[in-house]
Image 1: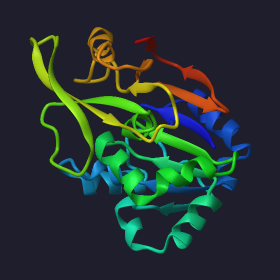
Image 2 (image 1 turned 90 degrees about the vertical axis):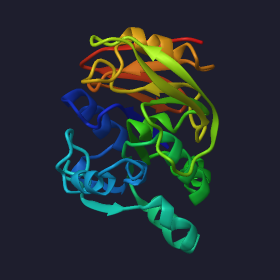
Image 3 (image 1 turned 120 degrees about the vertical axis):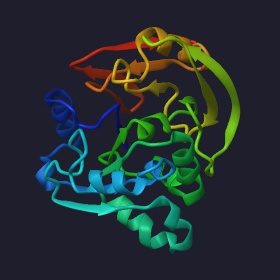
Length: 242
């Protein structure tokens, strides 16, 4: 399986071209499954999931012109015969994993059985992560919250951390959690976007993490092919080592 870990989906031509290259064929000849699970813990999550599925998200993903598109809801999988849903995953060319809460997503990837299936997928399969969908691939990661959602998820630790903002310092909660473990680094997405972290705050965040950390903006993605990591970007990014 190949990984395309993004901050905000297929947000520019460079990332689009990389996706096509990873698929090895046009998007119009490729099948995809969309996984919206991570967005549900947040207010308006169901509506945001529909926006992505219907092609009304900020960056293209489901509306790229796929040959076929299905929805895989991880919270439903434990109640379904694994042979049924696993076959659907194995036959798909791409898994499109939406953003939201990476702690919740990681929990359901493991609890549903999907995490166990991922390493066995054929090499041609492309995993496309968006924000939380990218973060959850790490063996260990950290996520910051103003107010962490009360939802399923295995939190290793949490601490308050002070970040600088133009309007003054703010205190957020940094939650540490175990991810799926397919990569030995983690990602801080949405750097320099709206009210998210700037590079200085990302460095402070990364300093709490025991693994290399890629801080990426919404015009950047990280690919992993046979263990080789590369960055594709039309924006800004920085690698912080522990």
